[in-house]
Amino acid sequence: MQLTKYLTLTAAAAAMYAAGALTVSAAEVGPLFNPSTPQEWDMLTQANYAAAAPQAAQLAEQYSLQVKSLDIAGVPCYLFTPKDAKEGRLLFYVHGGGYVLGSGMAGANEGMIMAGRTGYQVLAVDYRMPPAEAPFPAAVDDMMAVYEAVIKDHAPQSIGVFGSSTGGALTLILSQECTRLHLPQPGALIAGTPWADIDRIGDTYISNDGQDEVLISYDGWIKPAARLYANGEDFKNPRISPVYGDFSHYPPVMLVSGTRDLFLSNTVRVQEKLLKAGIETDLLVLEGASHCSYYLFNDSDWADFYHQQAEKFWQSHLAEDASQAQ
Image 1 (cartoon, rainbow, N blue to C red):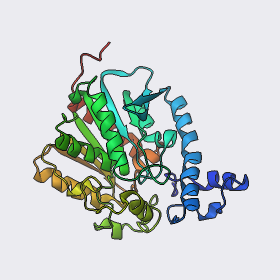
Image 2: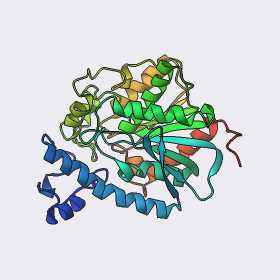
Image 3: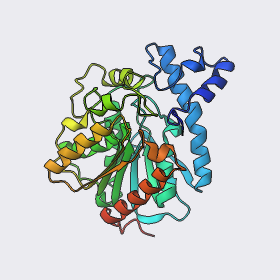
């Protein structure tokens, strides 16, 4: 497996460049691409969409998923329903992408794989992102607006929240926001390799620099993405970097990372906070895996093992919502 299945941009960007849709060479696009101008941000986001959205269409066909577009609390969402969906439980998905990538169906892949592999219905939130839309706190506000609407129709204990990278951080933030806003907690969380501290703090930001075949380095596109999203706010704000928040009221949490993951230290730091708070916590660290390898490489042993564990985790911790059973 080679790098940039996460940002499988080069082929898509090359086609767009050849068609005149992009004005920067495709050779410049990749994990170490460092956008600084509106034109460069457009290239990164457009090329990501061009690469990821077709993969989502393939996954919908592969897993026989019904895909429905929704508007919930003014936020665009997608509902992924397997052919023989398990009833009475709902998975609430927030996508990754450094708060700048993954708009629309380009952010759907992880949620579709979870739905297809585990058989649960998945609701995906298409939150606002810079540069085209709003920076912090728009992503958090959109996520919480959808969650608050969803729990009016679904028992919170029947809802499992998950996401990876940025989505893993937002998953952790959701629980902290529930405490702040006096909302009921979901039944369980899976935070995959969470971007729990968007600053370059943590051992594996250094030790796995160049070893992670997906992100490669903090000094690539994720560094300017952090600045763009935070928009002048303190990086230690728990609504941006949840590792600095309160973990005392969390539901059970499953954390996932890999030994080559740039964000392994982020994940381990969160585990320590959860354990100190007395929260039931599972940590799954995959040997040789880079950032998000467990779904980016969907034909791998990593993906098989992770989704088996995820399905067991949901089964163990999510209550059945009798009102939703048919």
